[in-house]
Length: 150
View 1: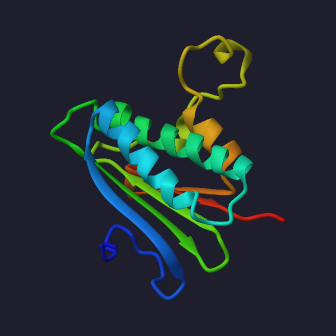
View 2 (view 1 turned 30 degrees about the horizontal axis):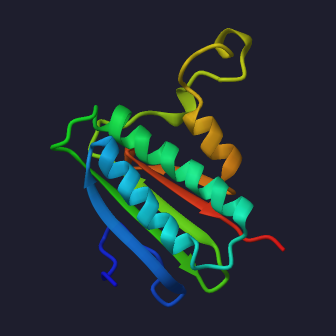
């Protein structure tokens, strides 16, 4: 297992499973890294519904990093970290090399004028699926947590 780097600052005393990859900004690479990350999640006690939530949120975050953050430039990288602590919390960090954005100034996808839009629901969806979501590094990094429930 790879040693955590400066981008994955999970507390090593509490982390018992960790996954870390850096990929080019391509959709093929996204599919592979999501499958690999979900293999780690499936090794935990996380229930099937939570696994589905995590996979969808991870997919949205990685695709956003590739398409919006890195403008689909394969020379730019996306860094993905996933970890599980001793209490089965799932932690995910996705970071891109783009210019960032302000997540507080996104259009509301539930507003009537946006209901038929073909895009613009990714961050909203992530917030619905994950228990904690935080943006860092000027919007170039998203941190997500899924908390286990009985």
